[in-house]
Image (cartoon, rainbow, N blue to C red):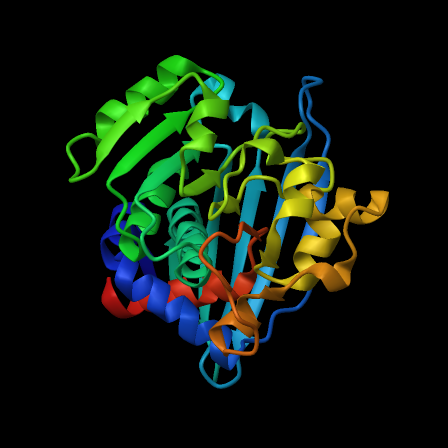
Length: 312
């Protein structure tokens, strides 16, 4: 059995190849049972942790399962919030083929899914990106969006301005102008794409700030209690999700408006299956506000793991 480390995963999964692999995976479909989602009480009285078990398979090709943990308090220990590993098995015999670094696979496939959605939903001339959040996912989201749109300017906002400034400095060697900002409202008003990757329980990006033509990418909230935007944004935007079942059950940005009556599930315009198959149109006109909410799916993990094993 091969062991594929984080550096090998990162090198193998270049954005163009990974985004296209996800596009093809959503088009053909992969068996994805409901993932196991378990809350684990924090031993120190802090935020509860989460254990995720995410299986998926293509009959006769591969079986895969990701075991992931989310410990929100890890930032206090200078550790990633998300950790885990991915096991890829032979689909004909069940024999283990590879053990793959889970955090890097998750980071890459999550950012690639947002970029895949943006390829249908963001304006073709989107140049200005606002990154809300400074965690491990932030630089990957920035580069993934830049792979599908002509991003030339990036502003980074975080609750800790020092972390935002540090991330901006680390990315300035790229061919993109990157700076940090402490004015979230003004940055949002000037952005073509806003990407959020936080663990916030309260809305950060206000719908009143969204200008005509903005694309809002919500990545961070993965439980019904989490929220990155408000009901105004939900009412203003044409809404898309990665999977309907997942977001309607787990994503606070979708679950809470449904519970309050601000959003009907039928108002969700489409998911990545429908977008990639041409069954739903993405952006309909230039000044339309679009919103993409993802919670992740084991389909993405399997597609990324297959590509990593193929190219590592």
